[in-house]
Length: 239
Image (cartoon, rainbow, N blue to C red):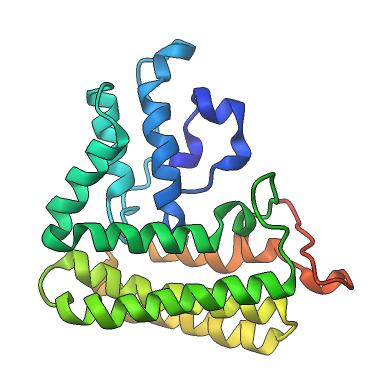
């Protein structure tokens, strides 16, 4: 995964980066491109990732960007990104790109990872509830306008369909945790795992279901304990 890359920009600011899968990979793709094109600055001529093979969910943008930048360092992120989305989604490329970028921004990767850094909101219960409710609305609207229309046209759209449901459940989990409803956290977490299992035949080639559930419902969720402070701001546990 992209978290394992040792490169120039990530040495400068590790906290800006987040494991490149699920709904956060879009933002990290930009840094990944710059990193791959800058390896020579620290005396490297290649990179060895974590070698997780099924990590292209909901799209293979990260892998495409990484491979393209390693092969040709002169191509910009915009060129590579546009090429990928047009190939995968044809006339809907811009809409899909806008959607994925929006939900990535709303989710706020550093927050999910358990870090608050300059330039990101100082999250409170109200902020999490507002931001993640908006996240659900964006997913709902995109599903109605595009996914339901194109879901049978390609596997890329099938991946987006499954992903949309999981993002909504993910948002519900965090809203529940930041509002002190642990029963709902358990309920939505179980639904998350069940939905992944039900759609394993669709996403198996691009997503390691155990790895996804362990990260989303364990590794990162376990770092969030907003009930500890009276003002509702998060307390983050590092592991």
